[in-house]
Length: 158
Image (cartoon, rainbow, N blue to C red; front, top):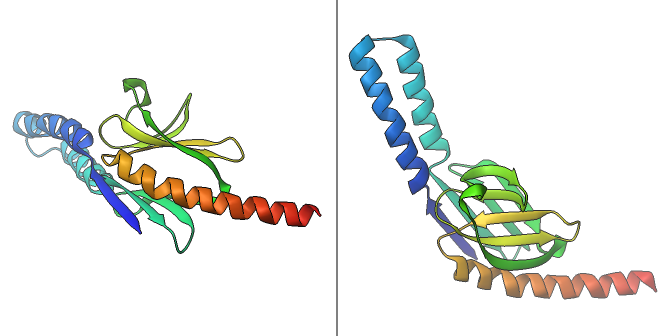
């Protein structure tokens, strides 16, 4: 089983910069409900998006990923995956979870990613610090499961 968590250094940097405004607001305005609420929101974002965990489960024949303690969890079956390849994200792909011209992007830091193309045409870009390790963990499993699926389809067609 492959499982890695990439810490969200980019998100933490942005939150640290924003927290300076909370401190400045607290100094200038004193105990203000708006400043306190904004500070609490920053802490919650830091907790929920501290990292991106990607898991390849060969026994369950699944690829899973989620942010922080389990936010925006997504699971794909190996049999539904058409292709996996290493890609490099650009600034326009951004960080977090979003839709782009290349499909869904899940990223917390850096530019290295794995693109997972589904049989239905959907694409996912998963940001990772261990691009080669994740690619190796996925390639063999996806190939094995795709061959089994092809054989089953041929048998059902007969």
